[in-house]
Length: 167
Image 1 (spheres, rainbow, N blue to C red):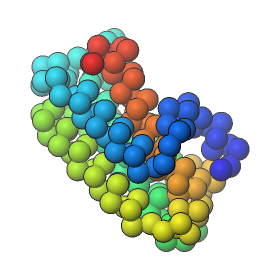
Image 2: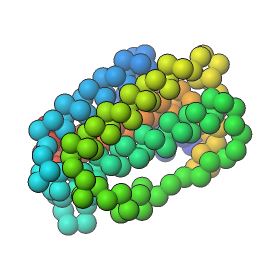
Image 3: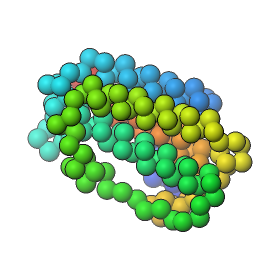
Image 4: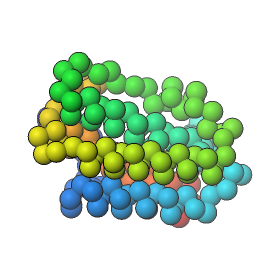
């Protein structure tokens, strides 16, 4: 992995360092789904501070980011050398409409997106997993992107637990 990438995303990667990728993706999927099981629509609008995202917005952010990481992984696995831009997560959340959606719909969407990400991973062979590309001005490998996907979800699950009281 690229040093810039390692430094930028180290806090996510540390959350999923150990183990083969498929079980990590499956485990973090199950964890996040279980964590959201007790959240209803009223609770989903909770913000621990006025300028912070709601629980629903956190879930929408995890979904959006997973899609972006999967798209990058697909492009790089297919040897697309186009440098991909970063994205502004705050802008995405602002225009997500998450607070107007049902928590059940957001949970279902996360479930489907993660299952699609797992299917994408299973479609890659070792050569594809070893490929790299450029996103957000950093060199990033396909396999690290998939670990990052799992670590990002776990990171936000930890935030939901610690700051929002979602167990």
